[in-house]
Length: 158
Image 1 (cartoon, helix red, strand yellow):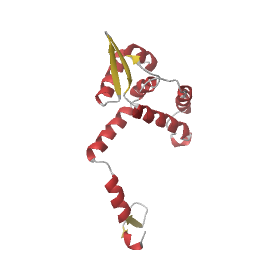
Image 2 (cartoon, helix red, strand yellow; image 1 turned 120 degrees about the vertical axis):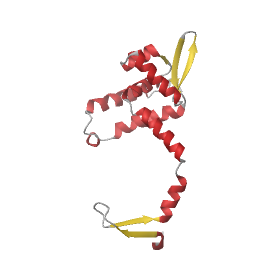
Image 3 (cartoon, one colour; image 1 turned 180 degrees about the vertical axis):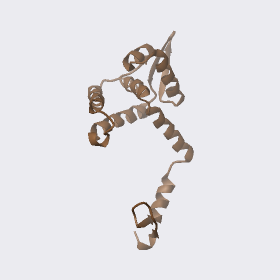
């Protein structure tokens, strides 16, 4: 990278006396950025995952199809709350439903959703406790244990 590709600006940036902007790198990254609507959609998906109740439902679905009654029991939530979570998750194509008579069975929509959850669960196992002082360690340990139990090749679902 040539020295001419840098733009040097002296500014008070809250501790830095000099701010250096690499115009070539910024242009390359800006060109690779997804469209605004895609970023908004991504934020919506992460927003869905930001609710502990919805995450309990999704983690349960890593084990395969389940009905609302079973999901409510696993998530320790009311059937009404689980139904509400599932409605939002279906609207964002995170889960799918299969109807059998009067029963509805829910599953993860596809392998991408499974991968996102698996990566997130693996990540929390790697994050040091000091990185999240607001959280009690036992919760992270429970997620890691649940993730370890799930890591077998015969599991069903999306």
